[in-house]
Length: 351
Image 1 (tube, one colour):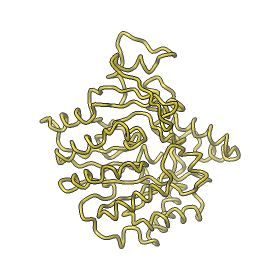
Image 2 (cartoon, one colour; image 1 turned 90 degrees about the horizontal axis):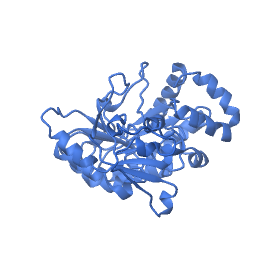
Image 3 (cartoon, helix red, strand yellow; image 1 turned 180 degrees about the vertical axis):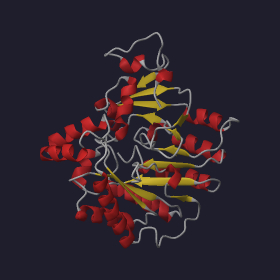
Image 4 (cartoon, one colour; image 1 turned 120 degrees about the horizontal axis):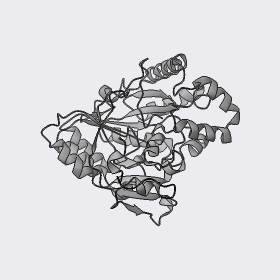
């Protein structure tokens, strides 16, 4: 979703106040006196729509998404959605991590749009741009209203998250899964402690995310894991892949979907800058691997996917899991976009 509907026709952006110039005059900018929100600004807006149509040229298989937030405090160095902040004339780096757009009326708008006669009940995906369960959700509590609206409309949906806060809404998810198809997936690309602190500094620990998967299973629900992103030369060794798959298997995940790092504009510059600071010897290999494109070569992606598939099969992922008590499970195939060579990919949480 581009932000043209939030642009002020009679105001041109300025360097000093670009965010203000591209948001409605009644947008409220807030800061919170809490350590977890230090240095962050939240722009509360009333969006004109909640349902976002995915452009036909997109590789995503779904046609509709809901994004309660823009920008993300997870601050993942590789997040592909970084470029969307430039639609607000904000930068794809620090601004994306600290200037968060909050659609405070998203649930109300969604309920209205789902009830419209022209709506055909198509699958709705969440978490394909930024995480709906990022840190701000604990304060704004937008997702309970969103899930309730989808439940009441009996509308199929899926959500992808790195956030443990999804457990707060587990009863709502279970209730929705009683009346429609619901998919949940956790994103865990690796389990390396040091690398997690550097490259995903605002997220829950990878093992905490896996614990969320286990808790969903214990409650009779299902959850898949996106092994995403797999970082070339950092988390792609046979030993690293095996260790991650083994821990995913131990929590009873219903599926594993491997996704190799994407380096799209915005994310590419931010990630390579991070790489140059922490792993300068890898900058050259990365440039050779990715060239001027966003994706690693097909041969590399196919090799990694095959390795993870073999490891998952060996670990019995999905083979012996008890059938969920409700229809809450891995992200439906319809919600999983694919590259032209059919490598599975889930934008937003996958990098």
